[in-house]
Amino acid sequence: MDFYLYPLIILAGFLTGFINTLAGAGSAVSLALMSFIGLPLDVANGTNRVAILMQNTVGVRGFHKAGLMDWRMGLWLALPAAIGSILGAWMASVMSATHLQTAIGVLMLMILVLLFVRPKRWLEGQKDMHGARPTPAQFVTFFAIGIYGGFIQMGVGIFLLTGLVLGAGYDLVRANAVKVLIVLSFTIFALAVFIWSDLVRWDIGLILGLGNMLGAWTATRQAARRGAPFVRWLLIVIVTYAALKYLGIISLVLDRVI
Image (cartoon, rainbow, N blue to C red; front, side, top):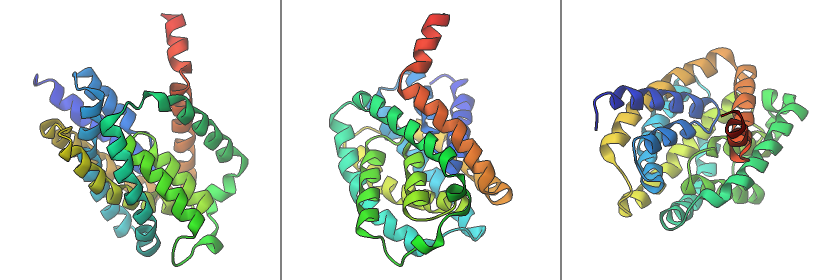
């Protein structure tokens, strides 16, 4: 691998870790870079999980130190997500992810509408929804999100935040803390499947992971300092971009301009 690619990989990792920790869909950056340097999509998908594991280890520690982590409920919600991720990772090892793009774009648009229609729910949460254990509806929701997260990491943070805010009653900052715990938990199982399928480039994954860790460390400090309004507006920007990208609108505009 050419020497000039190393700083690019670390930079992509930083952006990925920062965006993933505060919102989601940051893996679009790392997957794009790995595609640029010639990794097949399935190998890039597996390699990305190494960096995600490193990123969320730092993220969990940072949110815990800031006193924002709900360990009890977070681990309960991680259980169905981890089970779903095993199924999703297996699916990713045997099939293409391209047919999901339109469906994901539509879901992103729906989340964008909810971000504007019910802003207080995202900023303040709803404590009466917090329970000692997940309800059956929450179990099914996070199992489904786990399948998607195991299948392809990109965008899973946005779906997790939506489930944690609207389905479990967290505000955005505490939802981010629980989100990184859930992603860390299911990434362990998803990565194991990709390793078993020989779909991991360890040299790139570890270098990328260094950048992801630095981005996650920076993001946890920003979340604790700036609070839910900052995270909400960052999420609006990212969800808007993701919706336009997955629906092919960005590509269509670029094709016409170029």
